[in-house]
Length: 377
Image (cartoon, rainbow, N blue to C red; front, side, top):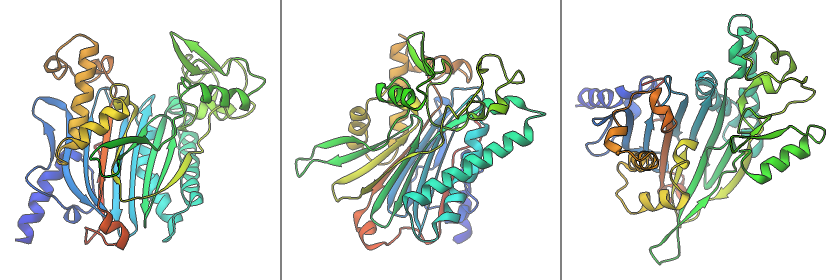
């Protein structure tokens, strides 16, 4: 019987590639496992599974030629770690962070989670990727222009920590008293130059640079190049030795770098979990381009938990199709790379909270859960 269960789990998880090192530890509920959407060859999902403090749902859709988003959920007696890594300029930085950030966090944690624990994990991951760029500089100089936004959630005991770099977003679905209504509360901070407070932050940090933010084609960008002010990678905007003729001209800055233009220090908040906190949506910017916080929370709240992430994904794709005055059924037929003209790569993880488990520090799993999105679809 055990062998049969393990075989079932292995079949369920094949679409996620190198998703977990310990497939036998994964709990599957019901009859829906991970797989491709039969009508959209670029949409993958895991409808419903267990993590240490409740249940989760996960989905990924690819738009780029190579999937630049990465995502993961790691859960066990230590708590739960969720990561969404929205890469830009290529997949290298997002893949590196998915391979290393949680491991750095584990090394730092040692049974205690603090703001410093998370900061140190980010700092070490940034240093590690910078070292990779240095090693590859002679053979692959363009890796200096690759970066990734990072959104991390950590549940430890009865506290939720949210750490963010860039513009991925974590939105809480919170019950409003006993009314049956649900409120959408954004917990993450976004670092996008299209936000006035971020532009002002950049101006304050670079008072002698009138070109620190430039509007191009109606979009504000840092140095006229990149929209986010914080990331892991993008070392050409942090270290002067990588800003030279070896990188593509569109990334090259005409003036020398005297101090880092971008930073890899995340904004971190600590949120004590409350009985009215129902679920949490983590998603890369590709989802939020098409869905408001309120719409996303409404979709999750008004439907069964199973398939929540895939349902959000499809709602975003339907809206992307509507904006281009085309049918969703036609959008689903468009291949990767061309699909990027209609929407970005999108990653979604929905966590549902079981407060009985959270308050007593019990866990649903006998062994740790480790789930990662595929390298490419």
